Image (cartoon, rainbow, N blue to C red; front, side, top):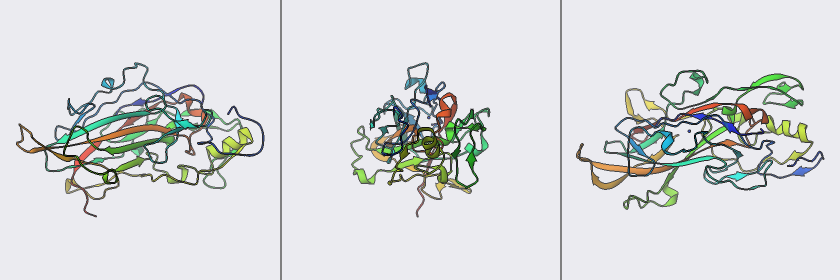
Length: 324
């Protein structure tokens, strides 16, 4: 993936290669330099019952992304890798090292608050399978891309089935959305002196919106096979695999404020001791960090995707946590 990949994000609340045989160990094996994501907008909307803020001071039910991203050309995302959704590494064509937030991947903090009876926040309503890049925006969480038509310069095993071989010269459409990851990391809220939780009490979610674990982190086909055929270098697959969710929590159809499971529970709002002047109830508040990246160890992180365009939308929901 050469060049810079730009992705259109709209969110509700976003080797020098040697021709030798051998074994090498990188952060991953990507041939790409940068991933070009075309245009970037992010809006946040979750209704007045759950308000959000980029600074923990000015809250709203909608957060325009231009408050966060000042560059009119959007954000450049490099292919990086993360085992925990918190710490990120560069690699591939670049030396292995620490990735820089908002230089190699997108990262931003969001505060949530409410005075409602429900105090848990979920990433919710995954509708990627109902969307295309050309679809009108719908309420929900989705990651879709336009796709890139690519003629394979080498034969490789695309998997997962033995017959899934791409021949040299074959033409197909490949999607950057298949290699995206989103993490939502609960943080201690430094603006709330009543948030005294230990780090092991905080939640972490890595979401793979492709919904396809077979083609996930460290698969032995797809880009792994393509890399070998192109460079004649064998790269060791990672032995540690991240904990990833491929679906989002469901809500009770008879009570939309009751979660049926905690798969995508991202935040438990904490009491603040402050009373909401409108409702007369105590305000509960919390903070998360959202990270969005292209996973360099994904089976679908081909270098064909440098011209793809994406739309990413996130929906967060207030609910009672599932008692399971």
